[in-house]
Length: 430
Ligand SMILES: Cc1ncc(COP(=O)(O)O)c(C=O)c1O
Image 1 (tube, helix red, strand yellow):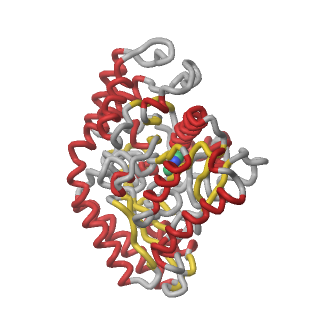
Image 2: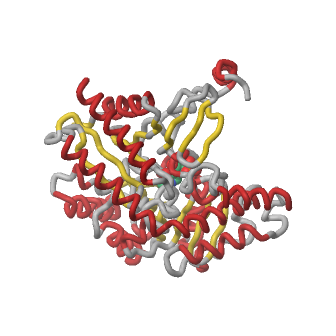
């Protein structure tokens, strides 16, 4: 392992500065919810590589499955010859996805899954337009940049946007002047208005939605929103695409976040945790839609690669074993975060589903003025105290927690103690 100084010099010399890195260290090893740096520091990691490591770092079952697969073969290309891992993974996905979504196609990243969900939707409907939501995040490719509902830092510096993508507000109950129901009503009305003023619903192929907004700040839509989208899609023959890249694979205590709402989408995009730490994504849907495009029109060199699929299958099996226990972790996390709303004026709201939970920081709890600087200060203070947490949100004022689903409760308490001390320190300074 090269020493820290040398790595920093090489990093400065050869890595693009356009790629943001949250923390200034170099990792040497990672295990469970801990990472150790090249210069010998240890951190509790509540980022999980942005919601990927649902079983923590270095999970034995995942590593064993990878080792076994590595010894047999690595790359063959699933569009050249068939092999086991993606088939078994697709079978597993059929079992854990909403009813009727039984067929999958595999890709390499979340963005690629969203790209392909749009291809499936366009081909199936024979239409081109796509509706997505403000404050959403769906990726950084040209099409997914257009889907994504936040300009900085994701878009606005790469020329014209991909056409025929329309955005409407997502419900934001905490900031809704007329309460949770009002936020749902305004979102659904915005779609109705869009269909009158800008694009005919007969030209809309898909509505793409995160069932809980991830990068947008872990915003949970009130009851009625996803149901309303389902009704609109049914009324107009539009494909409902459920983007579970961040919220899926047990993160919310159920396999998919949309399961909490009793809504069955037409397509689900999975990414992040689905590869057990390796690059992998999937589009899962009804055979009607997934088998509709002509043979050869969907695919890619590495989509469904053996190693990622073997790791992913082992990860899902691992998650299956611990999924009921996520409730305990959720209870602990929720109680603590809600306590901070009472204890700190700066904590405006605690929210989330399962262990996809966050706090929103404000400078004034009544006016709810966003406090992005405070969120950054809490993140920095946590870092000084040995804890990695990420910020998020439209205003960058949300602190989100991505603990492994199998995190030890005492270790979680330690991490939350640290966050609380950081909150005390920075709010006292403020
Ligand atoms: C909901 C959602 N969709 C899509 C993506 C894009 O995934 P990737 O970064 O793997 O392209 C992300 C990434 O954060 C995401 O949270």
